[in-house]
Image 1 (tube, rainbow, N blue to C red):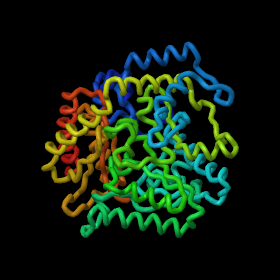
Image 2 (cartoon, rainbow, N blue to C red):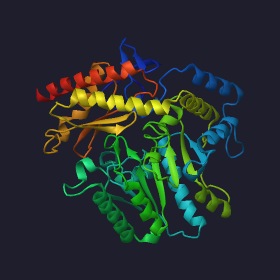
Image 3 (cartoon, one colour):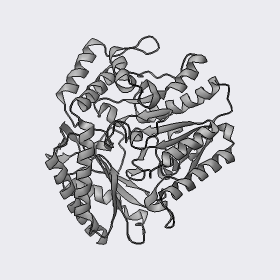
Length: 445
């Protein structure tokens, strides 16, 4: 019996005792390769003494100071590292305690931006189906993850609507090339602005590379430039959610760099602190900051643990290690190796439909009939079966269901630490392929 309200009340989770680099050690003696970094979190692995030392030093020096009164050295240094060089025009950083909190703050910031500019009628956000932006109510409302929204629909914000995702594998028509597909999606977004009322829309929100909902789906070339053009046509902001895919996970510091389109507001989270402390952030473009400066000269938002000194010290140490050891380039190179190995090992499997992703952010999708693009029934629980088979093989992966439309479709994410040894990348692919074979033997049975 446990006194913890765990995610499942019917199943007892294994007890993790400690982390050692890319490995997790369980109470029953098993050693598990953390091949998904939890949920694409553990970007430098577990138990790094340098991060622990930075946290310990900061806790002894200053564990907490309320941001209504003070700033702190680690918060200032972390902000300078992230936006001191003005990437894509982003110039300020707000530190919170999770990705969900970051999205809440980003939406509030977009709303205040327009109020400060004398456009209080802009209250509406447009986002995409098959997306996920967090578990808190506004973030969940912007997200298009049907299963996670379902129980709370009555509580979710009403000034939100959704357009199609950029998911070419399932939704690009046979007669379309990338340019035609992008043009169709741009027309759909434009039509949604018109339906809502162009001067009521404050922002278009999207994950730069979609993570948990569809399994590492990147946009086709030209997509974000086209979406940005629609936003600019009507004066709306572009918010890019990189909580899961950002800060090097896709092989570049910011996932949007591969698409050549910078956002007005960006959220980051999981890889920021690498799991050593809860932390997320909002990176804010200069024009948004300028509007606030010319108006109230304040952001009307605050939380108790905002810019927590120990969390900022941990994130600063993680990002310093990532930079010093060239781990973003390593993520890109090892991601190519991982995808190559997975494709080689799984190409003949009748139910492996796609291996995709960028950097060490890799998704594997499963279908009942890959030629016909026909999914398994949701009741088959394929992604969960693959996850369990992989865990039995000593590899931790992150499952997702409802891949195609929020109800049917299965995938898993593989997102190991950036500094995972090359030999372990090969082992992950080998063990995962064997786990897939085992899982589908059970499905057939």
